[in-house]
Image 1 (tube, rainbow, N blue to C red):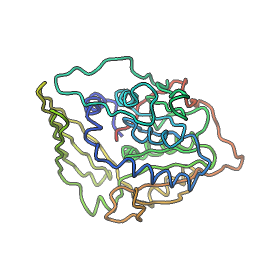
Image 2: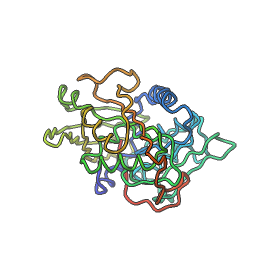
Image 3: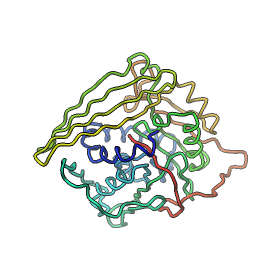
Image 4: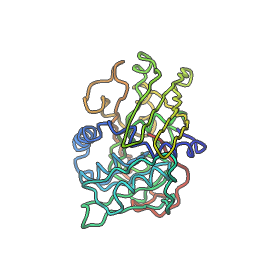
Length: 322
């Protein structure tokens, strides 16, 4: 979990987020995820995407026919998610914003307010609504339960305390219909312990912008957390910029998460590597979990304090990096 004190640094990082992850196979991952969702919840149509970042998964789900609400802790991330649509509701060919060059001012415009959906596609440009809102996956509520909740790109691993994990799972359960599907991916403990995090360096170029990201991990085995320090160097004719931020990532074993899910009222359905579907192993760093909300004896769910998909209830807090 990234604290609110880290938001200023992360807002700087957010301008280059899509650049650093431009080689991530979002389309292949979405196709695999949709296949799983349709297998487990064939009638699903409403989806809540927690920790949505700049909206790559969120928009992908909308493009594939789901009504989607994306939430994230970073107001700047949510702004970028909206900017990627061009503000026109074009869900078929979302534009990727050009990273800001060092020395250029960050665009200032009215940003999304917590608890208020900032974008809904018009009916003539997209078959389903797509909205984004600033919110915290540990506390967020929707007025009308959704069919699917997703926490992708290791959002759950950012919940580094047991309390954060329990609150996140309780929030997911509160937002799901009885029998609804929860999907999330995490760092897999056997792989982290077998491979050990190592220093890495990533070099990227876009136009006349050159970016270097140095990743230095510190493994806190007592907490089952890897703290990764990112040192970012940016060079362009407009100027240079350096900044640093810290990401704390928790890793989980399958028995540990099975127990936490059961305590939160979920039935574990499947655990597999994203895209390949391979069973978890010491070679599988990222593992995807699918769980179903257990139907209560009354078959009903308390809806007090929820926020509808277009969002009008106050939401406090903030949510996660990817």
